[in-house]
Length: 612
Image (cartoon, rainbow, N blue to C red; front, side):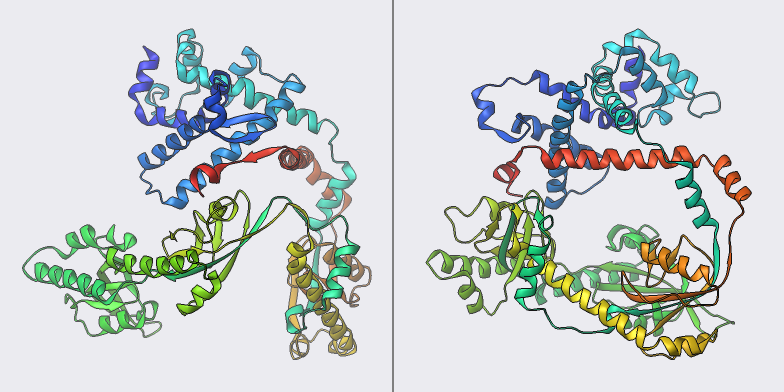
């Protein structure tokens, strides 16, 4: 039977299962009993719809197993990301399902079939049953398969039908509702084409804002700025400020000696007759070169390598192998395959292979770090303040600013567990357990949680920065104005402009009006204003203006403007109107989805179950 053939093609079935993931979530809603045990294992809620732990964890395991089957080595951070992605998708689906029900959006059987004809599932193009005589995907074979009524009794097809009928098609229908009143005017499109096709020759000058150092504004200015912007500085979710200490994972001397000993063993084996290339492929921990039997990519200059490696290469004769050499990357065994002189540069080029053995911390080294952090934790549990206990170990404290529902980020990268501790884990404890990632081990102290909403303390840092930037841009514009007479006197002499202090010069050669100009940014209102002013009087400088990165002004010596006929032709032949409309629709739908989620009542209990 046809479906059996599909099952026999295991890779394609796995890919179809990915497509069906959303459908699996949706179908399970209708199958899940709402008993008392379910209520005790609710991992979250969106608009009154529960997300059960059993259901959620099943999808996490499915996605994790799929990733492992595809060769991925999942870390704790990877698992946390999978959990967050699945939770967010389940929340989104529960929210939009209410909207779909409100507008009675659903795909009919005919629409489902049409959608599946237009959108073959991922992997279908490689499935043997859909291959034509030329060994390419045959749409005719695929549609013939869809016309067989027997396939729709299969669970995979039922799930796909459910997804298309109750999720994918309603989403398309909702987009059509949102786009009903959107249609860019001809004038809007013509204006965009004119900007793209208008070209200018001249020069722009910018005084970067970071050329000026300013002190922090007084707190009174920050308070006044906050009060003057009552519609700004809202925090969408709770924020935790959590102090923590970390100790970097570093291998001990014994770890390095152990790896060196193994490198010596490989050298002995190679000298005894074993293949350098084979051992490089089997043992080298440089993935790129190991796949090439240790080769580093042909003839290269020694300046491309770290000094210790480069110096070792210089001592070798062609065909010779080095003794183990240690660099910051680990222990290397190096072989020089060939070398030749570059006649153009007169540099000697080297073709090298190597075996890299990295030095990583041993379990004993990690255990020693843990014991040090656990000693700090023991002091805190006895009543010593976290800061005092850390300082007693001559360590410094950092602070993580964590948005609820996100994986915490530290100075040593993302850290699974810190968010869970910050929001849920400190009711009865004053210090966290020892946490770790690939770079370091961590210990966290009691955090301070700031509630979602408009908050001055949370926003103070951004306001300080904003006020400082405003002052810098003001000083940049003042400086540029002070040089205006000299700039005018320089005329078209670019070298003269480049001698001016704190001024960066950008020649404009055949530059579109709709483009990026250093100091102005890409197609910013400031650039359009300066361009319009300068184009009106060729050869004359525009007035100085504060921009995204300081202050700037420009001069256009000549401008080429497209004719009305050229603009009309571009508009007619490019399909710009529909393209522009769909771009607006996609943006609108994305904004609508984000706004719905922002307004929805969501309960996130992930950290209760996983301590992410």
